[in-house]
Each structure stands twice: as C-alpha cells, then as structure tokens.
Image 1: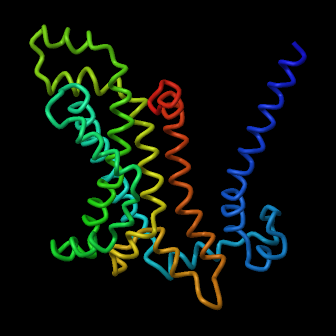
Image 2 (image 1 turned 120 degrees about the horizontal axis):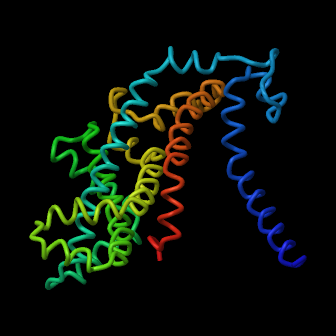
Image 3 (image 1 turned 45 degrees about the vertical axis):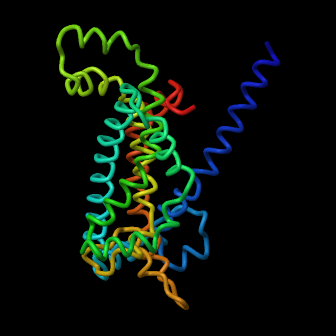
Length: 276
C-alpha cells in the first residue's frame, strides 16, 4: 500500500511539474503584458502591482494597428476551416469505413500521406495555384489551404472511431427504412462527439497559430491574421515589448479558452481510442 501511494505521488509530482512547464510561459506573457517596459526587464517573474501596472501595450495595439481586423480574420479563417474539416472529414471517414469499393484502400493510403508529408513543402505550387485562381490575398485561400491541411488527420481519427460503433445500429436504422443521410447525421454523428472534439482541437490550434501561409498568401492589412499582425511590433533593432506581449496575450487566450471548453470531450475521445 505504501509503495502504491509513493508511485501515485510520484506520478502526480511529474504531471504537476509538466503542467507548470507548459502553463508557465503563458502566464508570464499575460502577466508581463500588464506591466511597464522597465518592470518587464527589471522583474519579469513578479506579478504587476500598483507601481508596475500599465495598459500602454494594449493601448498601442488597439490604436497603432488593425488588431480588431486581424482578430476577426483569424476567427473567420479558423472557424470556417474547422467546420468544413469536421463536416468533410466525417463524411469521408463514413464513406471509407462503411462502403467498400474498388480503390478505397488506395484512397485511404493516399489520404494518410497528408499526415506524413508537411503541406508547407508545396508552398510554391499552392501560391501559383491561388494566383491562377485569383484567390491571392483573400481569406478564401487560407481556408482552402487549412482544409487540405486538416482533412487527412481528421479522416484518420474519425475512421478509427466510426469502426468502433456497433454495426447493428446502422443495420437497424436501414431496416426501418431510414435514408443513408439521416443515418449519418442522426445516428452516427451524435456518437462522434468525443472524436469531433479531438479533431476540432487538433485543427484549431495549428490554424490559429500559423504564420507561414498568412505570410505568403496575404499582403494587405485587411487579410492579415492576428499571428501575422503581431510581427509588426517586432523590429530589427528596437522591439516594442509592451505591444508584443499585449498582442500575444490576445492571440493566446482564445486558444486556451477553446481548449478548456473542449477538454472533457478531448480527453474522452483520446481515452475512447479515437487515436491508435
């Protein structure tokens, strides 16, 4: 009994230490965003007080940049990409799992290549394609790229989860004359909520934090995302750390909030075998 308690205590100590390592940088960024520049360098680990508290960083972000536009663009791109990835990924996973046809295995293997090969390797071809289609410097270009980026992993996770759903549920619905579309949306989709939450988190975080594709596919303030907008406060010789930390805090907190909202479903999806 004593040995078991010691092992449990050791596991908890390791998990707490890892949590502090993961959460610590986020807390430092948010905490220092409310401090004056001198206090940031003088006592970076100290929380803001009456003498060091300052909102100058947030004032600069809101008055010297289009941060509201950047934030809105990130929100539009992230939510649109997530919804389409979930919808198309679930439908494709259902088709590949439920209906066996010639070439289905080859198609599944082709989609799995998207997990192994980074999409950034095709940046030049993607840029040429968007210019040819007249989509350069548009949010639509970003949404299309992120859909292509997120679909392979979404299909893989959802396919593994669909295989665990008893086939009797689908057969019973077919015996009652339920159309295939209703079977998917009313029988299968509700059972996929843990896996959908898992895919949603895995889709949202890379899209929201991405800098590469907004950098090469957008060129105007009206289409920049929040991650790219932060870069305007980074200079070669002088960096406005108050503004940088304020902008980073605004970019970090939505992702943290989304993770907290979906955390229960995410853990349920992982422990239910959504990822093998």
